[in-house]
Length: 296
Image 1 (cartoon, rainbow, N blue to C red):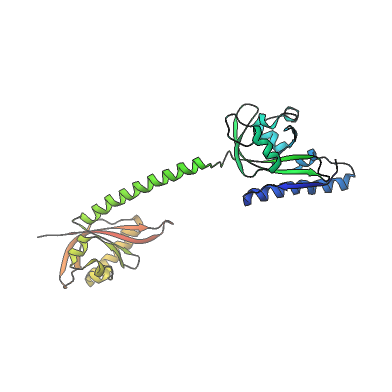
Image 2: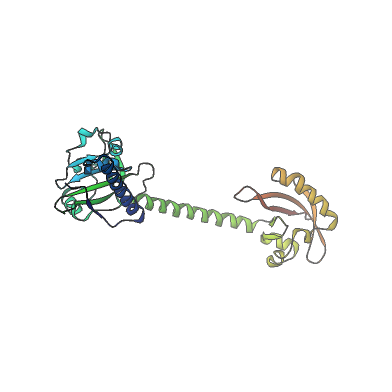
């Protein structure tokens, strides 16, 4: 057998195509470097063992003729236990895969890429893997072998079934969130207490109907105001002290008495409690407030 090879890589996803090309040509590079250094013949078997990915080599009789240390460790075999076996013997039982039967003959002709299947270890465990292949010919084209490049998916296997399950879970969680949002939105809007939120500059960003009714404004008018606009000047310093002394350090305030200015200019006594709003990074982004009108 000559030291020159023709390599045919099957159509692949970008990742597995690059994996196959890099793995095989790394082996050929090592082959050429070693042959020049030692001036002696290096076989396809030795090239397989030089690959960094788990790999094994199969002849046209479907017999494993070479296996590197990575595939031996993955499957738990000694080299002499694996060499000479049919490659069909290491495919997990009950696995639908083109690596068995007549489909394997087609594989020997066309190659495969990015096939998810499972290999059977010596002790009977099934290991999920992704397999790509490279068909290797001698330079005269009369002899052919097929190189199996194996990627262990044990830690990150994600099959189509897994994806479908995840999509179902997301749909269920989304439906629950929407139902919760609908339920709490109803409580928010039906509350007899005024509820509103402001950003860090005090600009209103949301309020319920009770809050706007309490002050005599429409919601759109409220959203054009700041919390200072509805607070009598004598309350400005008191409010600042409550925010800096209670809300910011502990996340909420005690309930306290304050006055609001209604749309017509009259003042309205309310009991108010404030809560700090934090963003995903944990930093403050605003405040919630619940105001209860003191009816006489």
